[in-house]
Structure formats: structure tokens, C-alpha cells
Length: 145
Image 1 (tube, rainbow, N blue to C red):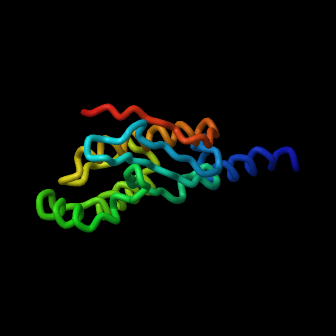
Image 2 (image 1 turned 30 degrees about the vertical axis):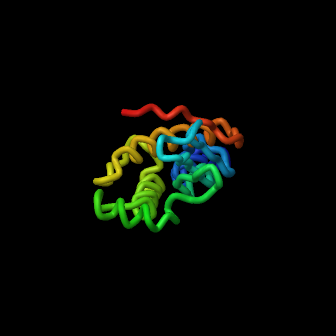
């Protein structure tokens, strides 16, 4: 009787676990290999627990380490011109990746198309790091689209 129950217990356990995404638990970061023409280097950091991304930080920093979403002058200017700003669209992209767990399933935020392309490339790289269990910071050559 015990042997007969074992396959059902295994199937039940696998179905309740949400499947295995192949992600190793830990913290992973991918960043642009170099600063862009405006002096920013974008990065994505994720935390994986139980093979699922549970937190995401997406932002950019300048050479001194100042974070782009803290730049109030840039926020005011970009908000007027594009209708969005870094502190808004970085959170939206991170939230969408948290929901979907797949950068290929994300939609663009109007006014932040260039950042969308960068985010997808960085998110794909950081997920590859998590699949490999490689906690080194991945330097990503951003390809303009």
C-alpha cells in the first residue's frame, strides 16, 4: 500500500511547488558593461527564493554611485517630456517582471521605450545568472534596438 501511495505523493508535491524554474536561490545582479551617453549605468538585481524571483531592483547609477531615480531635476524634466520618469517606470518594469517571471512577456511603458529594451536585456542576463547559480555581477553589452 505504501508503494502505491508514493507516486501520488510525488505528483502532489510537484504540483504544489509551482514547478521548478531552474533558478537557484540567492541574489543576482546584471549591469550595463559601460555608462551610457548620459552618464548612467543601468542594473537589475533580483532575489530568488524557492526557485522564484521574490524581489527586483531596477535602476541606474552614475560614476559616483548616485541613483537615477533620486534625480529630482531629471524626474521633473522627463515627466513633462515623456509622461513618465525613472522612479515610476523602474518600479513598473520590476513589478511586471515579478508578476510574469519572464522578461519576454513584458509590455513597454509609454515614454520609457529605451529603458524597456535595456531592462529586458539586463533581466534576461540576471535570470541566466540565477539559472547558473553564478552570483558574480554580469556585465552586459547593451544592444540598442
